[in-house]
Amino acid sequence: MDFKKEILSVEQQIQRLKKRGLKFKNEEKSKIRLQEIGYYRFRAYSYHFQDLENSNQFINSENISFEKIIELYDFDKRLRKLLFGALEAIEISLRTQLINFGALAGGSHWHLNPEFFKDSQFDKTQEDFKDAVDKAISSDRALSHYKNKYNNPEEPPCWITLDLMSFGGLSRVFKNLLNNEVKLGIVGYYDANNKVVLEHWFQCLAQIRNCVAHHRKIYNRNFLAQEKSVKNKLEIEKNTISELLIFRYEQNRRLYAWVVVIQYLLKPLSSDDKFKEELKKLMYHCPLNQSLHMGFPDDWKERDIWK
Image: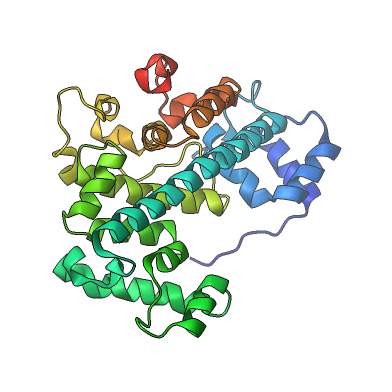
């Protein structure tokens, strides 16, 4: 099939939306917002309220307007900002724990020592370190200082190398560690009880961080579900991660399960209460009854992790 989408001006985009049953309270202001965010991006938020099998007509058009959908768009923007701050704190915390526990166990260059890593993953981990250093060699002052002053070891210490790693890279470093004092120390720091669960959490949060950083729609996105191997290793009795056990396997893909994880990992950090209170405020203003599509239970604020 050939791609033959018609190119529309902003005025024509508004007329098409009106033809599909969308109400506008102020077309001039609507035109400004469409010019600002784009028709394609707006449509990502409107699809949920359209009958895709009936010429994209808006469902329940008496209660849905352009302004209401923009309200949802703005809510999603505030949600991304809140999540970004929390994920930044977790990323920095994970980096710090890798540096601290690693340096105490194996010195400044512990990350170059194969004794700390799974045999099958050591070479790949070293490649990740080298890639991070090579990309930053001309722009990072601490790295340049080390390279200009020292030549043994040639590679910089862990606090420089790990500081150059992305959240995704850090999650892989953690996953590739053997079950040694470094990994177990980090598991204990977050009171996670289970290293496999923590590996999976960091992996998923790194992907959510990328969605947030690149301004993707977040509120009703499906995220990675817990892998069956992870789920099978969760203890069914009450423990520190029991909050997630109330969900069926497929429900873990919704945002609520992951804000629970975020709140849990913030517990040892100073930003714990801030995220919790800001999330409650934000969800109070969640438009168009969308908390259901985010996986939030009706009684979520009454659960222990949010008190």
